[in-house]
Image (cartoon, rainbow over all chains, first blue to last red; front, side, top):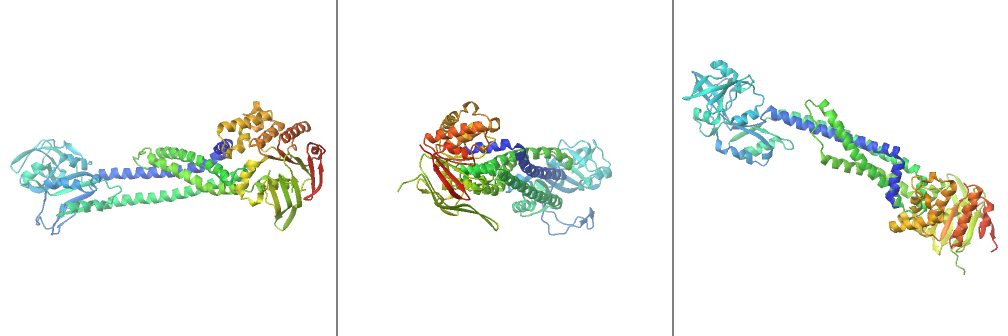
Length: 385
Length: 230
């Protein structure tokens, strides 16, 4: 016979009351787990959307002149001298401190060239990177597979009267149109897009890069920090974060996180109160028992141990059951509240935390009832016999 | 000067509830020797149960001293008194007072939960006293599966399992029929003959025949003390 036999015996005997007590913890923990799982899924989902959205950092050479272009309309012609990067320096981007946050790095060379007597913008890209970045591009025909194939923007194809399969001559070389992009509303509608090396050759800019678009996954790090790190590596570059979209979405998540935290604190508070009230009730009901324990030689600390051990067992049970229920609810609710949202899976670290939190909460809420039980005067308790 | 096992000097106990004061024990002196079987009888409210709880180291008197084995009980801290109860006293409560969710064996082992004995020794000691009270075949039953007499036997087994020198019994036969009550009194008499000092509170004067000495209390004072002829 040990003190824990008494605790377990009491739990077995008062099943209904103990389940009610554990229910407070289960509801509290499951609410927290559900809210955290929803927040987690929202964050992942927004990250994925941002990735689909494309680049969120743009690196261009610094210029001391002002652009005379607004909304795609040039008012002063091309009258500024363009500086460029060396393609050989591009790997330096991936040496920044937060390199792990960098996704796609898509360099481009830009310049004007003449096709059939018409000036057009030629854009040389690394197709593998570019297509990964511009996942929304739709085309007629196919994307270029060889260095002598080009992709035309919808407006460029229309103005030049070219279709997939046609041949086109640029800078003395002949290229084949592999495909035509559907209108995107972006700058590429007016461009002829070719392989980087081919464009550098046509434009007479061997080994040069005009600009770089970067897709960064910036969870847990401020995007401006990334731009500063890149700018440090390229002193001649102007690195700009397209952070409005990111920030507004992140702000929404932060607001939801704050809301979740508020709800969690409230639910935990109610749970703790429930545990305390139930434990107090249990102690009052057990006055007779406690009187017997004290009369036969149990110390105050022994009585407290019995009550706190019961609280610990219920806390662990409540934590485990709450974690399981929270994950189950999250799995069911996430597809309903988040468009295309999929439950991110069981977070065992959160499971450990839930267990610790439930056990600590149960112990803390039971401390006063346990102290009251321990301090119970055996003669008072026995008068209740 | 004769050393007594239990010495009660000028004992006074007053209960205060709001403006109301009631005197439960009034200037009582009593001395009990090792090996005595003392019954304390009196009407309801006479102070006999209060006397038992004070001797049981559970109820601090308003005035006076209680010495057991020369130890001043109320000079000890609350935790020291708990240890004292565990070592010196065995309680038999009114209405058995067994823990309903523990088996007979577990109930009997309860006082040993806070002693340093090993599991095997606890089991051996508990089974020995359960056999002693004739319930070996019911060791794994719950209290509500036993008759009143059997429950009283379990309560006695629990009281003696730690081999305390003093047994304090509060109306142990109050809920039993006369036949069973006689059996229980026989068992207590036997324990007394084996060396346990027994103090039993009862409202039933007919139980006095089992005692070596009978103390009658009235209004918190000793009315008569009768020594039974050997």
